[in-house]
Length: 195
Image (tube, rainbow, N blue to C red):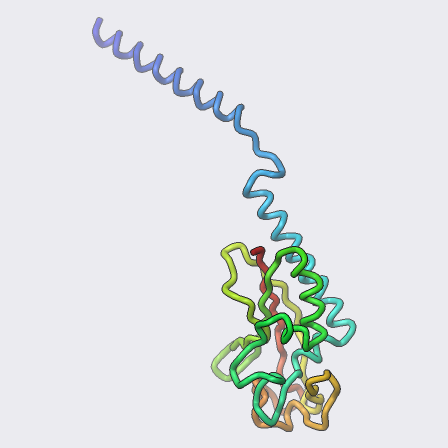
């Protein structure tokens, strides 16, 4: 008799727990504005906008000008010490690419970093071009490649071509990878995240 009573209690307790779980699931709704889906939607929008800006920058030449925005005298990007990236909005606006990114993202509260990744003898290395802070865990990265050839001109601080070429300077940030006229392939990475 006691065993039957304990079994009956266990079944009743199981029914109560199952009913509680079913009730809780019906009360909790997952909507398009739930935290996980809304974050994913925002990240997808940021990525699509980033890819759009890179496409436009590629089409109007801003991407290539940024990649070759190099001072061969100082061995750095224009108006910066060596191994330093543009950080302030005033400096970021020195290039057309920087201005395009500022216009597209700053009014929306989105921060961005820009890196140039390139091949070396030891693998892929990245050079900071624009650095606005440490990216969050929810950052997205839009990319576009630029192929550099030996005889392509570097650009001055006003984004005008100079007489110096990519291969003609010994201190360009990306090294040559071939002797066939192809200098290197630069992957432009724009990392985006919300403040």
